[in-house]
Image (tube, rainbow, N blue to C red; front, side, top):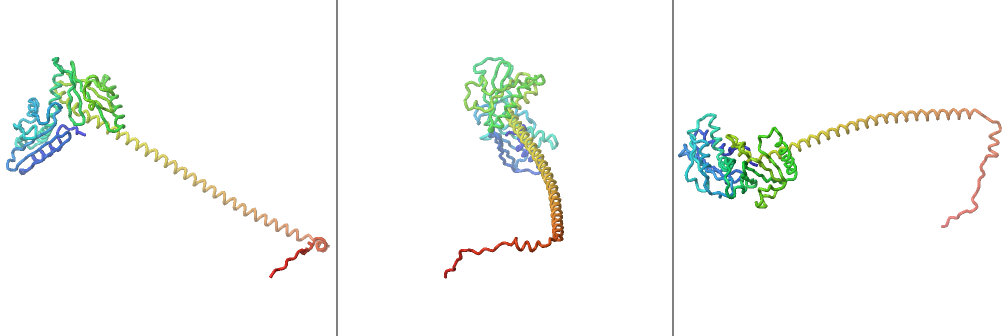
Length: 367
């Protein structure tokens, strides 16, 4: 994902290191960034005054080859970055589109030096935005020429092209939106619909008119099918002269070039927010279930204690009951032993004796 800073962080760090060095440094450093951007920084200890910066970057329009020279208006914009400490070397170093000669002795050793070096580090942004600025400057042009309404394909990132269509009194920028995961498609689609609703409100009446459609707009008819194959539709902005007046031009160009980055950052942040809320909700549910389980365990323990007491009471009552029954039986026996009937023992021996019977069949043991 592209960073939101206009200046290259890696290039700025190298230039600040050279500027703040107390002794001359020998540097031959190559920096590669997204979008096939290549920086080459050279600084020799034999010539410590000058530092050479060569830049190779794909142009914004696909119609120009990589090795072509930069337009005149682009070179003028580059010269205006820091004219007191920067010069354009003609011709540029082989394999690069632009070579700059930097004189750090003309940059003061103060807080202003950081701003000046940051502006120099943003030269690649100036190169890429110069062509789009030239298109937007002519938004009110009413010249009718052949191919005037043909879409211009611009590439700020190799996998993220967008189209600019010149129309009467406005310029339309169309962004085909693609995402790898279905969750990102759902979040982005909802965001685009909300953006349309907010754009139609009175609070945003000065903002560019925004539309979203799941199918390609009519202006893109005839474009290659691979450029129109999307899974999240097309977002369009109508740029009028109100959005390109004065300093608004730089802001409009920067927002258009980084629209893909803004959308991806928003989708990623929204997805992280949703996942974080889901985790927090899950933790609350787990805590609630744990509290319920602890309460149930405590209730079961109380019931277990109560049952134990009941069992002790029942066992103690049973022992007392058996003891009382045993005592009662003994009393009955003692009472029965005191009653005597004269002549009953003689009667029992005579009439209540059990006769003895001998088996008729006898068995003989065989040897």
